[in-house]
Length: 344
Image 1 (cartoon, rainbow, N blue to C red):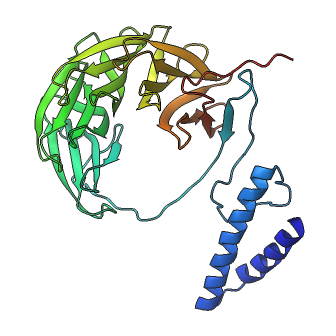
Image 2 (image 1 turned 120 degrees about the horizontal axis):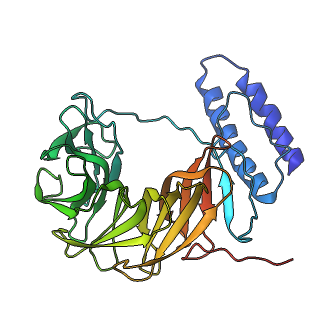
Image 3 (image 1 turned 45 degrees about the vertical axis):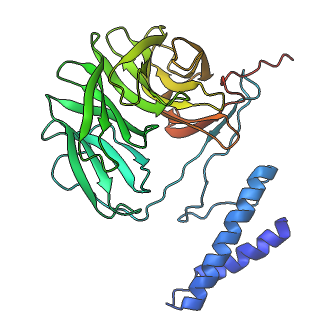
């Protein structure tokens, strides 16, 4: 494998040095780059990385520090990776100072992206419905303009095929949800306050549970806890909120999804002195309580987390590693994201 790889490298460097605008050479260079990426990925999986030194000015897909750490959890895989891709960039909203707070995107039932974000200039919640798959243009709607609303938004497609947006009401410091009236989200059937506690609704994240109702993870700044709100209907005209982690100063950068077991799972930051990444696994569909675990520690890790369910049905979390100035990925060994301690 290494000898074949050296031949590929030799051809690669030879073609890379050619500066002529020859289309045949460009095609060959592209083919070699694809082959390099494939062999590089194979080498990483095989543990052979020294024969594949990255080019100084070429970004290879998946390139980064592929260190797998077997920490106290034994079977929990944590990876650091760095990937930069810039292609097909568009600006669907050029109206002014928009998008300053948390933005969120999903794909509607019509196949077009639906984006929620904050309009700073007007202090509104805005949703943009893209007119094409690439979102080369979009129609924007101020979905909620009552006070200073729309920060920390998150959007998902409900069981009825319509958008559901969670966000922060900064005027009252409450958690709100808006339910779109149509696929394009040209208006909202309701903009409902789900939690009117003291200083709540930061870092919201919404998904749709196994019961077809919205499930919102968010930070309770007043109590410094992680909370989850379970909607009472598809339009989320009301909800039951529960504190799922009451440890000191936890719940920022929440990201929620539904696991293969049909229960909610939330990644979030422990902003206490520990500065860890944590995951909470709901005990029921309504997430009336949860089991929590520290997924990555020590060092300052876990901020800006984002969670998804992988093809294997297990949670996958990406997050910020402040200590090493990098991006990390944690793959959970089970639906609870609880590792197993291996005694030696």
